[in-house]
Length: 350
Image (cartoon, rainbow, N blue to C red):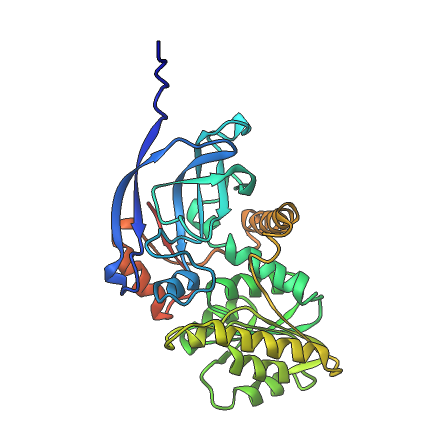
């Protein structure tokens, strides 16, 4: 007699699909059935996911390592564990967690590896926690690992009003580090409240303005704009200073693959580092080390995220949420994020 195996439990979910090279209006809302978590996995009911530079690049097919179309975007998420697979600690059920996903966050539910989860403090709102997952890990690691910044130093942060930028400047100010930050003038008042000395990033004499504020050069510069801006930032370093490049935002709307531009950037960074000029340069890659040493990668990422979440829970870091949108208004959310007129992060609330 043939035994009939029980069908796995399923969940009906809503998700946003990026079908190809489309405008924000081309993003699709889809309902589908998600199977139960398998060994080592959990099912998370998503409470918040962000719209970041990564999704803006993926929409244009210009983000390194993005999957083939179609796929569900969503670089990170916050949610509550609803189901677990075999081998997972059952006490996780009902726990609010944060996780960096790279894709898949723009959905009502997501299957993720339990090993990638970090618990979110009970007092922290899901959308507020969302603002410091990838942004917070990036800011913490760039400031303390890449630049090895110390109290009393002076740093230059480009895009100080952005998702990464505003977390970075708050961490720096909390540590007693002086911050010069570039941004559009309408963000300057908010940056001054954070203790930042703001400069207009479009000023024709920006380099001269930075030199007036830091005659001896800055101890570290954080630049997400691209090679041309990185060259200027490197020239503004003091002896012993560090440039941390972490993006190519200025090249987002260019045609063709970003790979040649990226390789050119890496080549320049290597040249700066090898030359005996008393300064260092690096390119920060959020996913560096995951393939070759996943356990160590998780330890580093989780430690940084816990530190930032604790500071958020204590009120040391202020979460900047530009706007909250339901999944059904993903087009408006993407358009606002791409306008670059807001401070902080645009968040999707499924």
